[in-house]
Structures are given as C-alpha cells and as structure tokens.
Length: 77
Image (tube, rainbow, N blue to C red; front, side, top):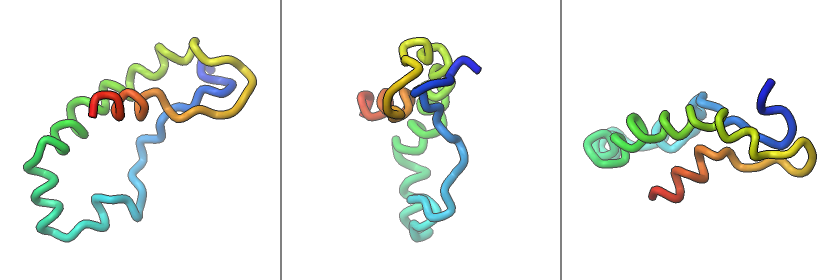
C-alpha cells in the first residue's frame, strides 16, 4: 500500500450525525443553493483524489496526520 506509515487517507463516508444530516430542511436548501455545495461536489473530490500522489511526502514513523485533502480544502477556503 502506498500510504502506509503516518499518511492518513480521507474517509469519504458521511457521518450519521454530520452537519448536513442535522440541518433543518430550510438550511439544507440554503446549503444546496450556495457556493458551499459547489465546493463540496466539484472541488473537494479533486483534492481527495490527489492524496495518493502526495503520500510519498510522509515518513513511516511518527504521529498520524490530518489528511492532505482536508488541509488543502481549508487553504482554499
């Protein structure tokens, strides 16, 4: 596996108690019609798919990292 060691790949599974599942219907509609939905659907998958390419930057020992896709998402925001 190319990401053995301290590299952590993002888990794409949605959380049962995540933000979107806990929002009211009105807030979910606002989310779906805002820039946030476009960012989630178009940009985030590209960032998460590029994580494997960056796994060589991480060593085999040390603490686990936050996933590269999440860090890049925060940088864009």
